Image (cartoon, rainbow, N blue to C red):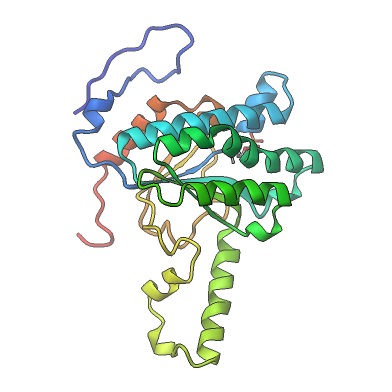
Length: 258
Ligand code: FPP
């Protein structure tokens, strides 16, 4: 199905296959790809570097993969950048992680604008430090009319908190007479979630060998294809994304039908 070329260049990934972009583009591309970017800390530890070095490298990979996803014609790229549970990390690491969106968006905003990328954020941004929130709002505002890839950062995001909040809002709307219980459908619930303007992901990728969802888009991932890899996020390349899409293209999505 795909051109398979044996890699022999020193230092390349252990995967023997090279997927050609042209071949992948012959078949349907997932419209919405969601990624749990994991393994920054382990990447740094393997090199005897501070964990922050792993996060910094992870940020460079975000840039590379965003650009490539756009090139492939992916419509939405959702990236789990900071979970509601990540506040439990040491204060210095949290502070560093909070600087990353600002650093990323400030450094790459001109490039994102040039590439027609539309930046969005899901998560409780009110709890973010002022400097992080300002950078995020600026990027959202300055890219709001862009029609290319939607780059959707999950920042201070937790799926259970999102669903809980949606239930509270639905209950309030019933209480104030705007809604009746009979009107509660799956579509209505979806419309109360932070992803209300986005289609559900077609493909979920998680790096670093962990096989769990860690409170990421629990409702939205109901029919999504999952692809797990041992590759640590800072080592993730365009080739790995093509590999994940190739696996997706071989799946038979039935959505519960036959
Ligand atoms: C998980 O790796 C990664 C994170 C909690 C942070 C993800 C952030 C980035 C990839 C940086 C880019 C962010 C933006 C906003 C551009 P881990 O630290 O849990 O790794 P470990 O499990 O190996 O310790």
